[in-house]
Image (cartoon, rainbow, N blue to C red; front, side):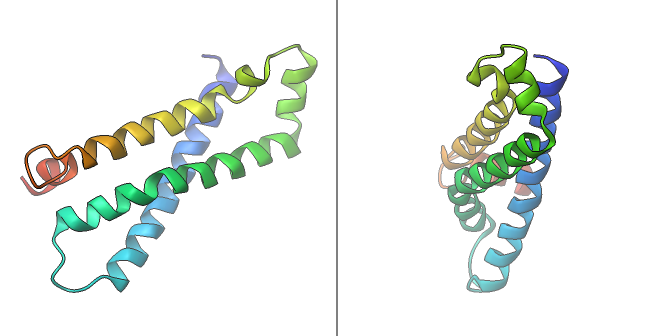
Amino acid sequence: MHAFDWLVWRRCLGLSLLLSLLTAGVAAATDEAGSTLGTRLARLAAFLPAVVVIAQALVLAQSRERGEIGALAALGASPFRRVRGAILAGLCLGALAMLSLAGLPPQHGIYCYLVAG
């Protein structure tokens, strides 16, 4: 991966995590009082793919407006090469959401296992 890929990866990851915190805050504020941590994290993991897509769209639009993607296109980079960092950020967060929904240990996601013991 090149420097631009790492830059886009960091931007996507940072914005995705910020939007995830916002989503978690809204979910916690509107959720019923008896919900467990595992239930809340599973709901957040279900929203994570949508959050990542929104972050990718915003980051790539910013890069397009700055001319970074156009410069790569002028250098002959393929369309996949121009957005590779955003794709990898989405895959990382998608894998994290998948692990949390996998149910390790039973009845809890991996987040609950790591956070709540």
